[in-house]
Image (cartoon, rainbow, N blue to C red; front, side, top):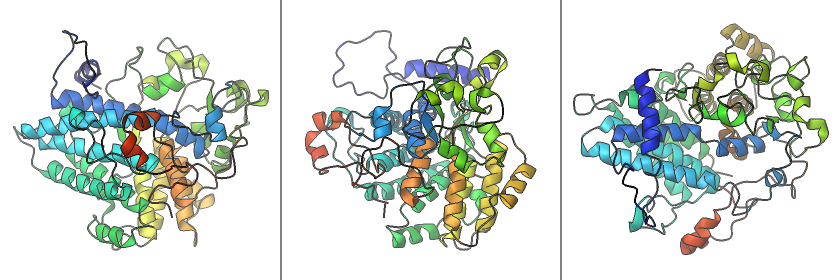
Length: 496
């Protein structure tokens, strides 16, 4: 990664720390604080923030059955019991809205000067963030949001209507990104830490997000989805493909707060010491049920128990006794983190941060074709399924031959229950990279059969989170208008 990109990313991060915040209650003014920025500088920081978001992946990884707290940590009582309160994981609400404020600034300022290519990127990421919010909370502020002091108590929009609006947003983004790049409509270039200003790849990302949105609501809005699918591209290359992962890298360096965020939070400090959270997070026992001993990805994603030998040991979600202390179970493997004794030679601190994998895109395509939603597509569901598995293998440093042997012998294309097979393989591909999507797909499809926490309240998995206490305190009327919310019985609109 070039020095230019490093400079843009980290200078931007300093300049934009407060750009996402409303100045409504800002009394003290710092004369040294930047009061303006360019769309490019703000874009770099916003993309970096989007990629670094940890909390949604973490809770999703727990509740989709991928991760479990080890016996070396006594916390996570709410996660294990499903005791969801208005104070629970509120950053899943606040972080996307802060991020969205940056993208709104980028689009507004870019449009003013004719930089539609940059505005298009902001629109894509607007859809990316709002989908996360809807998939976690259902109705949220959308049309009345991000207006600063002009609307400090924004109304909530119907979640289904928001989804429709996000399709429009993505179509607008594609139109922006399809315009010729010239001296006025300049490429984002180095400011784009995902695709380095490659608008074609941004269009593929937009198409893939559209497909994700439409599949998610296909069971509850079949006529609308069918109409939208009819206008979708009918070629796999129009979506993210096997070697087209959405990855972020602002130029990570081995310095505090400048390394890969996932690595620094779950792994090691810049001084090669274990992070304070290092021993807290491990693979669940269910993970090793899904990722079998004959799956080569197991040895890439997980270390044997204690980092030695051949036995892989996961923790049943909800447990936390001495039998599951970190040294006795399987931690995150060599594609994610080094062992303690070789951190000095590891370069994993500068690995790309995953935003979306090409494997996920291929599994989305496979499901749409299998369900007859993308008629006339240029590939069969089986081809897309097998290519999705191959993409997962390749991303983990394995080869195509490994993938072929695996899906031929261990996970062949089934005659029936094809969607279940697709979601199972998507679950594996997402493990360690996007827990929130794995949890969302479980809530949508019921696959895989995620075990209930051994300490869970009742017998029903959580379906959503509660609105934060800050919303009930500061936006009382609009939040209470959503009715009585129960995380176990109140559903996201796309649930059957």
